[in-house]
Length: 380
Image 1: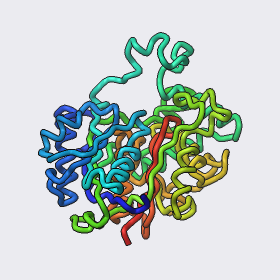
Image 2: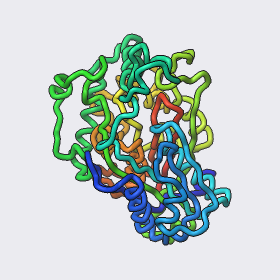
Image 3: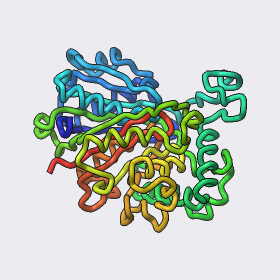
């Protein structure tokens, strides 16, 4: 399916700690805005894809925004692992004739809502047998992995600070970012309060209200749109053998997570390889996911991900510019969908932190959960 589908429209609401309107209302608004950006009438949309965590159903959305007959609809599970998978499944549907124009979206009001792990259901024995032993939140699970990584490879909190500081600098040049006006120094990072040792406040993503959408169609149809098409070169999903939640206790190596499985599939069907990628949008709910993803997707060898971040390697002039909107750490956290839209902007040449000459972009979902990834390229 290489280059047989393209993203032709994107849209997003403002990002904030509290937005007016329900998740359903925001979803409808952003889907209409993405169609407007694409120059496509909503009645042309006949494919839909969303997260299983989405509270807005296909039936309600299709009726409210004025879609015609819908011939493909699907959902992808695992929260932060789902975003590129939704877009990729639409790309497959377009490439195989199951639909002609598809929309993927995510609407989420976590900034003004609750935390799913904070209620009484998470206090005792559950599907996650680790909960009674103190790993009650995702940050606790990632902290365990990071401590193991530090022990094995000599990584330090300075490496995590490299990730947080790079994302913040991008956000400071992005007026859409929640942290646009909030600078951060290395001292600020080091003095921040602990959340789960060795992770501090700035190792954690934001909690954000917001909604985003993108429109997928054939390259031929896309060339009639309002923007140059961004080709979906390929996509993949990954669930490794014996996987367990974020901590991978049953894997032979807990530090080789779903990214490794996804990357083998992604690059195995592509003539674009890691060394060819100009810019990357790597899922960053927590800073340790960046070095783990750098290794999993082949930008460096196992154990070298932390060192890769040195020397402003993730910055606009670095070895691999990463999360050029500020990402989940400093722009907004809407289950990673903002990374997809920023990847499209980079390929269009319209990012607030545009990487000169960028013609290929990797967009990933969450490492440590069943995951997905896209390879995007410009249509030139």
